[in-house]
Length: 382
Image (tube, rainbow, N blue to C red; front, side, top):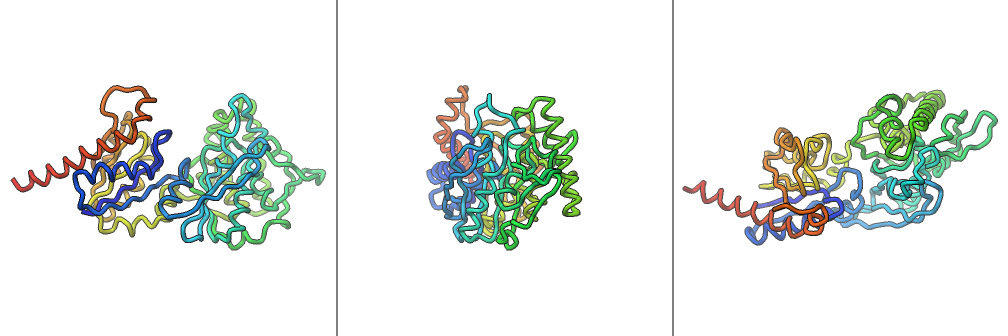
């Protein structure tokens, strides 16, 4: 048998590669002669960089950059094993985890550090950059990122602005004359699984602003700022970014990728699967095993296991899903390519206990699944 193991990470418990290793360990105890192919994956959010490093034999690049409040933070990104693609989690530079809860204020935060990671990737000679949009502390429409890349913003008095969420309404002019010319030769993709537009009731500020510390008054100001940014971009570039699905991702960074990088927004999991050449890996597989920390009714909305299952079904390959827990509506995954799902938690436990015992539980569940496969072979002969 050829068994492809392609899970996402189990957040706060195991990386995707650690999950792969434990699944293989359990299966080998029952099916030692099988051919195991491990492909750690992610959907563009937290853990994407590590998954790409593990899946492509890539390398981790660390870089001190400007954090969301202007202080320095330790950022990072991945370069794939072939040296051609950089994968950046924007949260590594501009994420919410960099700001203590009481200091969170999206009027003051900026994506400049994300732009600085892009610049560093250019210095490494890549020709493609994938930005994972998720976990942001920002609501600046990607203007902070743009300033790091040489794009400048001016107010009505032609004074250069220091870009952050609360400054967007002051933009009168955008100057592209100083932009880094290497950007013209780079393919930019944003790995994005939300479809929110830039502005309005479903836009970046209204939907995501409160979790970044925005009060109702701030939400109104931020939405007005992004709306104004959209007007200026349309006047300057003849590009309407307000209603593009996904433009509101990461506080409007989705719109910024389109406007300032000439990039495109793509499904996170589809982007990652393409980077790791997933279809080539599974074409002759007999079984695919995927999973994530929790499988529930939301899993079918662009999560990693469903992306894996859809690719497997192209070749008629059965798919098994493992999860730290099965939540309400998990049965919906059966209609989207997953044939069976299993919780790795074997009994009553606290969350801390479940996280601590994750590796052991994945291994034991894998043993049980492998034994069930063997039992089915026996029953077929009866």
